[in-house]
Length: 246
Image 1 (spheres, helix red, strand yellow):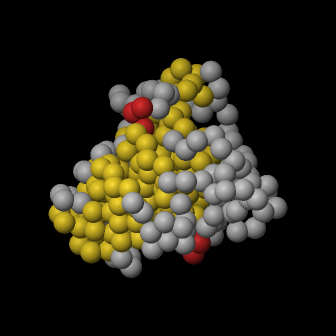
Image 2 (spheres, rainbow, N blue to C red; image 1 turned 45 degrees about the vertical axis):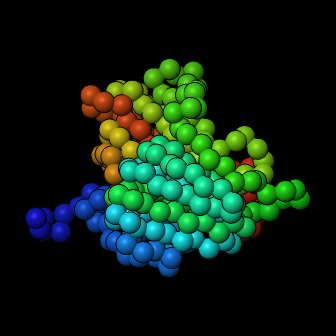
Image 3 (cartoon, rainbow, N blue to C red; image 1 turned 135 degrees about the horizontal axis):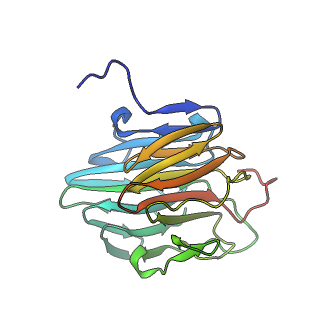
């Protein structure tokens, strides 16, 4: 239904809130029977790209090498082929694909996955290998001693990785203990529940399906509301000196 130009989506110089009513779908190279919703990219000023791929039954996405990628399954079942490895990924499963490995993702039935891409900032050491994981196999860690806020660290604590991806689960009423202001930028995909996000000097209601980008030094805070836990997938650049240039 037409809502006379109303939306919760907001674009500001240091943050972006995109809500599903404003999503625009388009295929990317390598997609067959699949489309992407590009949430953020360098066109916005981000130093990474994040998008959701929506697969129709029989859909496929053939990905060339050259850029490292993180894939997190949101719905359905996907078959990932990368190099000599083939893996079945279920909801909340994920994989990291090194920049040198072409990959193919296929879906027998409808499915969705979040994809994060970032040019790799090389150190004088071997880049990280391909990795496949299951979020449910990772124990939650209380954030700053708060048992109502669980963090699951999806990528290894290894300086070879130049970004981090976590899930954060807030019990109803839980909130970050402080307003954070830092050099890392974030991409946040709301997976469940909802609450209120402070971004800069503004406060926004957010719920499952929303995407948020935060530029470096954007003031940020989140508190969960409602009767079910709020959960999001969060990206940040990590393990590199601020003077490093992509």
